[in-house]
Amino acid sequence: MIREISTRLHINNIIDHYHAGKNGTVLEVGCNRGFMMSELRKISGYVYGVDIDEDVVAAARQKGHPVFVCNAENLAFSDSRFDAVFSIHTIEHIPDLQKAVREFCRVLKPGGTLILVYPYEPVAGITCLPFWSLSKKGNIHLRTLNPKDLMSIVRQGELNLTQVYSGMYYGLNPNYLSVFIKPPA
Image 1 (cartoon, rainbow, N blue to C red):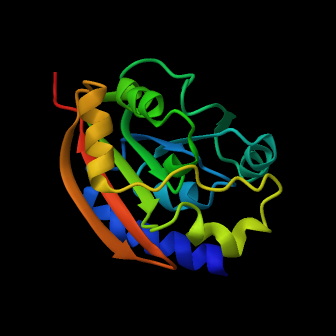
Image 2: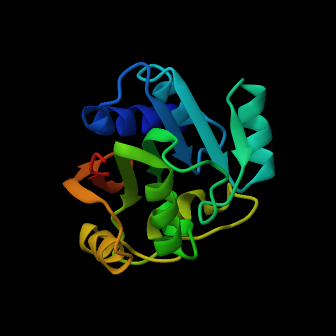
Image 3: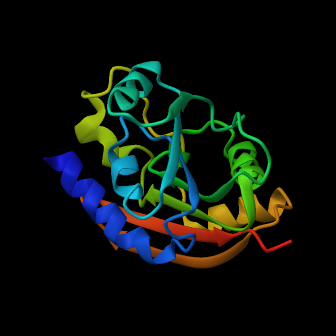
């Protein structure tokens, strides 16, 4: 029940930033068991997912989702493959975030959209403490993030991304939402 409510709140806040349409190709990085993928399929006909956890990938596959075991820092897809890349509550877990964002940019088509949702946290991991015992891996957040941090990562990495939106919304916890566009070729 909580997962469904959380998924719906996220979709309601990110839907306005997805512009590829029903024929768009979408990648969800950190897709878990495919909760969000089911919703993303309603707005895009081609949705793929990656996660580093073999157990959750197996669960997503049982639901019929095309999901692969893959590290966000080394995505196993060709350049310019996706119209949109979504990552919802994943980037705070990635050890080398700059490398991961570089990969997100690499697999985005020119004109593609990168949509990142991450928690507002005054202390790293505080929002996941109620759920920590539910995780077999106990993977706490590695860092706090805010939109300025992401812009700094984009600038330092000299990535070809333009920030088009930065804001906050409230779901079960407060969330940041950052949206970038890869300029057309």
